[in-house]
Image (cartoon, rainbow, N blue to C red; front, side):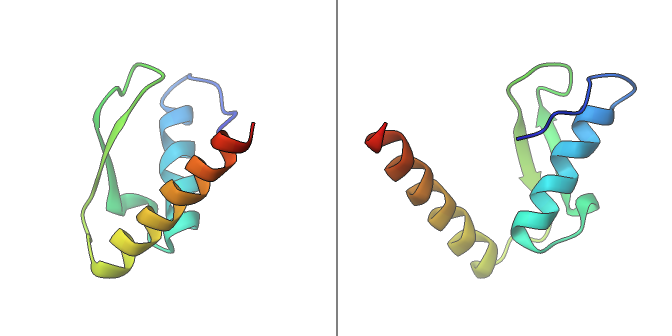
Length: 70
């Protein structure tokens, strides 16, 4: 969860930094395509690889399992 304030792009930078940590990439590998000024965002990954795809699928599965239990 990103808790940075939406001032001077700090929240967007925090989103890219968090994604970089999760996927083991650089923050600059992520681009906010839609939602730069809103809460919901669409992100593009410049170095899309099989490893990134597999990691994304695992995170989605974990998230679904967590929400189904609640």
